[in-house]
Image 1 (cartoon, rainbow, N blue to C red):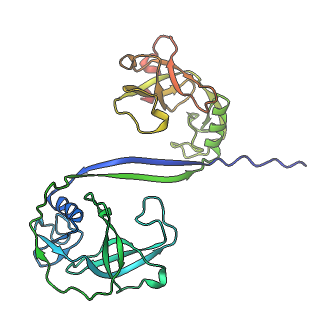
Image 2: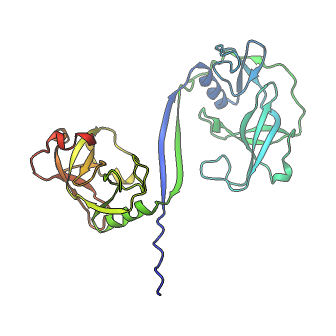
Length: 323
């Protein structure tokens, strides 16, 4: 008996990325501006502890903290872990140690990278100092890394600091990014393969008989596995929508001018609405109940967008359960 070849295992690299913008309060502003000026600031709590990095509220009493103090740029490693393969965006491009360093004068530890020739050169209790970045902008990366230091501990009490600098840093933009490889299961693989043939295929629950698109492999209501494949559409009905006024920063949307419309579309025969872009109609004329159909580009593996079919709008009662 001839063997059946195993289906292709689909994989795709995916990136979720967005810039996170936040304003800084007086404590964080002073801390980051201080780094730009090669000054490390902490805060002193009511019971005399010095916290570095500084926080705005005492983690023990929750009292507001505003008393800034300057600590040394030298310190002691309290714990560490060796990083054999640095990743994109990490402080150093060669293997290094992640270290928690208690700076002289501080009672808490600061996390950063330690530039060392190998794990044998790192130990708890070793002395280190800050290596400042050549160009500093008021960010934690103004500390390029820590490096080994032969000097003794600076036992002087931290000195009070006003936190005042010229041109203080008032906000930061942190790029949040997640890189991962996605591999769909049986149901979604079949859905993707069908799209390559310009078909939309869902799966029907054996109990409630609802057809889910995209299929999930199981009915979310009944909890039963779904096996029966059902071709739906290609036409559908807009159930709800939103007008997008901010241009997305990715190659797929570079040619799409704002404002544009993204909508939930209930394909004919489906019991779950999927989302897609609406085009071929002014954005302010898109409406609930609008009948639409897919538009494919040459070589496209999924519809580029949906456009009006010219049919009369669907009655609300026919799609109200999918809004």
